[in-house]
Length: 243
Image (tube, rainbow, N blue to C red; front, side, top):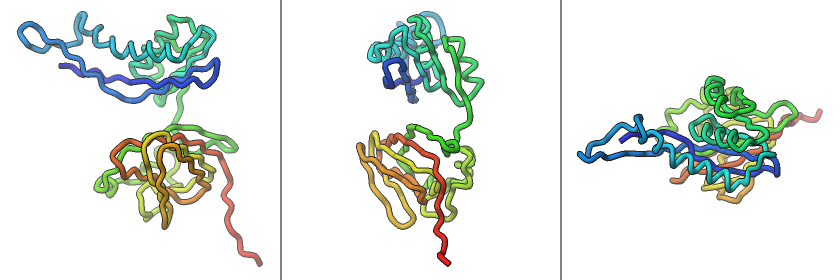
């Protein structure tokens, strides 16, 4: 039995002329049994092509549901196998523009020949640009208290250019504060937002506005929580003693 790692897709039509494909990790397990009940390697012959039938079907169904036309622009988020298949569909249907967004230039270079008309890469930065806004969707997996004890919040946030945002010796390793007004929309699951000395439990459909306070997100449940964030750059206002 062989494993083919790939990506599943969720399609969102952002406007009449822009189709956005958001990609999430999944694994496809495909096996072929011969007469002798032995297992064969899927990397050869027809079996290799057969292993792509299900991922390609996902792409085609997403394409059909999104009602893509030649006049549309397609934005693909991710650089995995499903992204490559979706680009091939884009090229076959002759869409006006196919843009791929990824974190690594090397992966973008590999996927571009499949039909991308433009690629976008760059580092992941937590804070929005000065005077700007950033929108992102984040998955929070259930926490393991024992694992939390071993995490280095400052090192993790340093990878997002935000080591300075971490609150040291706080109740959670990822307690932080940014100079921004954050809108958090809980799309799926449940989560708890921790403050310095209190907390707020949120469920799917809840919306929270976070205005530059120390906070951390804690998933104490058993299911993944999906949150859409809109971060708006702001200037911190510090209290001054009147004199």
